[in-house]
Image (cartoon, rainbow, N blue to C red; front, side, top):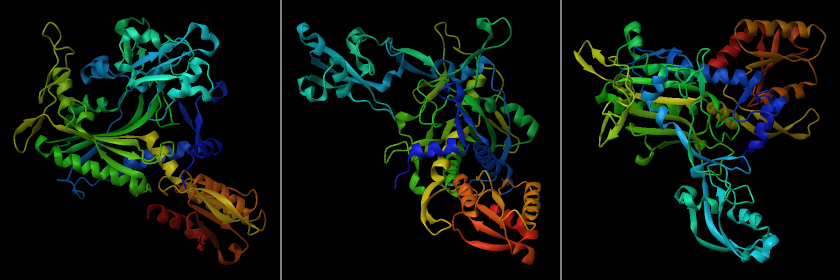
Length: 548
């Protein structure tokens, strides 16, 4: 049975996973707040990623599929970087969408998301004026499709039964292919007047800000649109201070900002988001092997954390999709419930970036000429955006070779990953209540490493010393660094349901027998199996299950 995105979003708000930003003021599109449980879940996603990619990595042993052993280190770089960084990286000139605005509806659209068709009809309220031909438009994006017929009926003031009175001409045409002198005949997707759309213009996706008190043009800066450039500009610092040798990777988790024209689909496309990125530096002649290794490794990571392979695909980009500098790119995509059956949304991209980034920050902004990347020159024959001039090559002291390393970039979204784990975890099943009546149970089947709360502790009754024992267990779990909740309100079945709905994998109940056998009942969220565990072994038992 397909999962309902509306029900998932409702649960996220009801149980404190995700809230609309500035909700009491009507919200702010493209920004989201993580509640107590959502903060824990997202933190676990970040931590597990860093543990698996960096902390737990054994740099002395080559993992399965790796050409050789490699090192991993981490950095944390600034949100605001020198403006020249974004000019040399290409973001300043290329990081934009073409957009149009509607003067009547005050809405903004991606230019390439609007399609249209010429139609001739007569206005119901102005029949004496006779037939009129206009270009009716609709929105056609990955998640919004509006109807040309409905928009045409609205413009001409006709009911659906009069659709045959409209005379359509030609094929549906993307708005970018329409001559600009025809804009006066265009009817926007959400209005009843023509000529309300502006000419297309560039919309830079970087957030602009100002440094210092004067606020002049020379003080302009940008919030970073990605974390990668902070790693590239620190390449030499890392090599000189960390004793790393190629091949090695640098990992970073941090906020990025993109001023999306149309943020949508809950937290999937936001203006403020968090990235988990690796820039892996390797020798040019080994880079193809490393690209395959990281592509496969990252694809397996999501499956190891509970995402079914049925909902996950690894898609290689077609040649026309590749960035001008890219040797190859693959996307890990997930079947989010807000998409149509058979459609997938990007979770992570693994890109073979060649030597583009280190060369750009050395020489200046690069462009493609044939099969080569060359420095882009202005009308005076000078570098359009001059690089740092610093030598960002690497010297191999064993082979005595100097080269500019190639880069493999696995770039994951912490927010998109968290959303995918939420969607995958959401399940409904039928379970008997205290009276044996079957009821629908909502359960979040998070992998134990990701679950916000790992264990819940219940005293069955508020007497006979049960609360005191339960509180001791709660304190012992807390001291061991295991996130847990203490709950003594309501019948035991309802307490179980509350924990199921937030994804707690294990519940511990102190009951009447505990005083006699010094054991508690441990209940598994997924199997619903129960077993007795000695009180003094609870911490070790939960720890073993979490690490197993």
